[in-house]
Length: 329
Image (cartoon, rainbow, N blue to C red):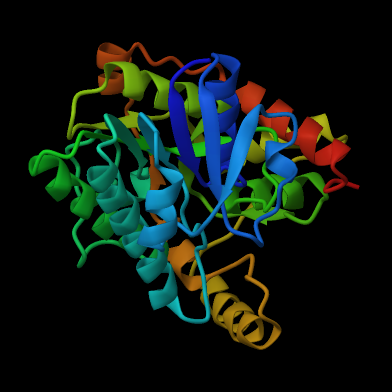
């Protein structure tokens, strides 16, 4: 049996891909899940489930007993919540509890999953790990949560905690159960419910390449360093244009200005407060869409040997999985 490893967030999209990659290479994988967490994404993975909560230092410490390596992938990944401070609190306190437990138990190395959400986009260029947001410039509760949690982890690394940080861009691919905000775009477009688009762009990467990047960070990453795990910079209109023929639809041609969409976003959020269901269109998402979220993975390629397959494979695999799972009609 390989190295004993703990993965948090294995019921989720990226976490399950990391757990699957670790099991495939022969590591002794245990996963930390809440009692209420779905188990579908860990079906078929050779792993042991430990019940606990990433915010509870006691249960996390118990889960780490005898563990050599930790992957803290779990996160509250919502772009909207009735109480936005809940997102910040969950991700910051989760990172704090996991890092402190790792220090207490003497874990040899930790890989912390941050996000490019903590990086500051720059007009006209793909930014790297040095383009840093602060709490005044970051947009939205989720981005703020990843920013403050990443700063905490950096500080602990400076104090000697053996942690490497990875920042996935926008993962796409199979087993996006929730789905993620980008997964929702794919599903809505595939079902013909996105007749128009705003002019924005994002960096798309296959979720299995992100998982492989986590393993490379464990094996080759430098303590305290951050590595962007990204793929290709893609305009939203081009992404939608690739989805359409895969599902037998015509791609949307109408580009919408943002200003008229703000009242709709405010209305969608007001309805969400009553229904409890996360809205598809949010004010923060519109604000973020003004920026091309383009990123460079040059550092991860040079230091870790990270490589990403064509992003079109991620689109194809996502469509195939969503169709099989009944998300696409």
